[in-house]
Length: 212
Image (cartoon, rainbow, N blue to C red; front, side, top):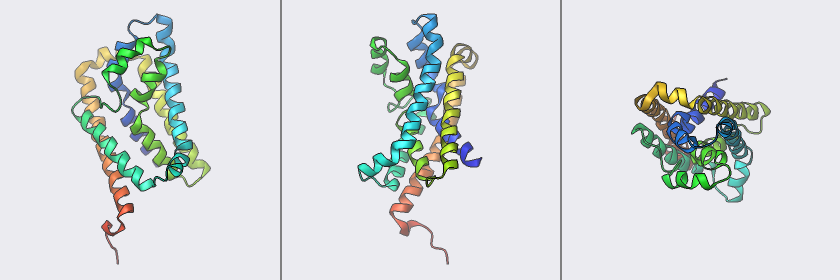
């Protein structure tokens, strides 16, 4: 249960659907009502598929490119810390979203997948966390169930938050969303430090404290 909670909190903090609300509302405001009703479900489903594929195929991809898990921990930690720093300033990291992606969105047939699901929600940070989660299961069935259940929980929260985007935006206001973003950024910074420390300890074993 603790692993499920820890992974859910980590991925949710990175995904941060609350911070994505202004972008989501801006992109979907001109869409027909029927399209807006379908969009949260499609976006959440696409995000889950992306996270699940990253979890199931991530290790094989690392092996293909001969990338060590420790290297991914350090790189992922640095990436996540950059995102956390932006969130602590109530800004959206450029690794998750860039304005030109929003400008191109109306020309796309399905904005639920790109840019909403990826990279706005299921971006490089959350993908890195899912790959690292796969390395800790050691092939155990329960470990796979826990990781995928955590991803499913996060994607269900994406659906619920996007579906209620109007009332939530009105209730929280810009100040409320900034406070939520900064709080999640603080959690994310701590997660990033843990990743970097674990990766560096594995790369440089001599850095670890020696116990008698």
